[in-house]
Image 1 (cartoon, one colour):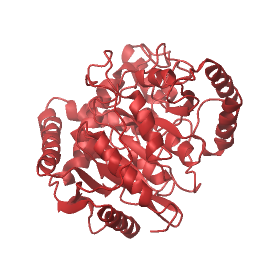
Image 2 (cartoon, rainbow, N blue to C red):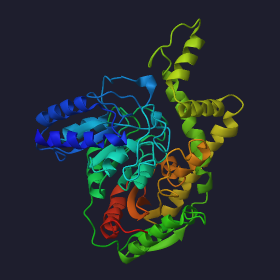
Image 3 (cartoon, one colour):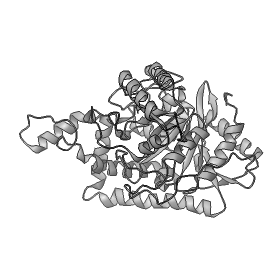
Length: 455
């Protein structure tokens, strides 16, 4: 019981971050009840894990950071949450996020923006900014987030923590509220590679309730390697443009030197279709979102704004007042690219480009490269409000992360330096369902990267 109280106290103290949506009294009650019922034999016994608010839980509301689901309680819980409980973990409340996971700064939540744990003037990244901020502040060892185009790795980089995106199909999506179904995944944020990997291993594995979940055993964690002798690591030239932030470049250069010192062979490679990744993503993801969010209409889900003469008026009022500006923008874009006359010009071409991006990765890996190393983001955390009026600039903060989602391959972000106190993340991208190799390299790199040095 005392452990549950300590967890609750730490989370309540982090209230200044606006990262946790669960009220303090409800949180304390739920943690106490879970601690009393937890199985001491579980591999995560007593470990508090917060859950992003677009992942269904029984104990807490699931609002997706939106007014249209305010107060909604799911009648079922996500498979990932069920597996955490079976392993003895404590579900430590729901974390704030960009509305329906649409955003790169957690400024698009209906419940206010999340504050960066190290600098209140900065954003924590998004859309899993609440999860990243709580882990970055030391309130929790790990938290669940979700990824559609980098929403675990990008905030992990900004907040100085580890963020893992598994292979598409490694972790069940059952209970994850859909945004872009062919891209969405549950990922993990942790204080260390080990913390994040332990949680990932627990939530991974087959699930008969999710047709997109592969029929594979749970991930087995590798041992920490003494060296990376025998590893071939590629540096995609497209991820190191001349305009890359100088501090990010210095941090990456040092990380590459450390990888070489660990025994890895490092060579330059090319992923030629990288330049088309962001426009490809921002056609496919909104198209899928426009379909998935059609159910929030005031009839099936969400509040009903009555007083209208016809069904069209009800829909317009409900969706217009229930959704925020960013969600409305993406629904409009998605509806447009799927409409008659524009489907071939936009959506079909985006799918064709997605196939070429995935082929780029296969080509590189088929030529003897085991992993890729890149920056996670083009810059450290930017200031709150800096990109709100320029959606394109906001979208470009995902330029190094969306490719892994489009290709369905695993990737991890881990801290590799700091500039003026702000963390910088480096990214390792692996081959499909070879998370163990990716984690080995991450373990090794994490061990030798200076913890607090300025880059």
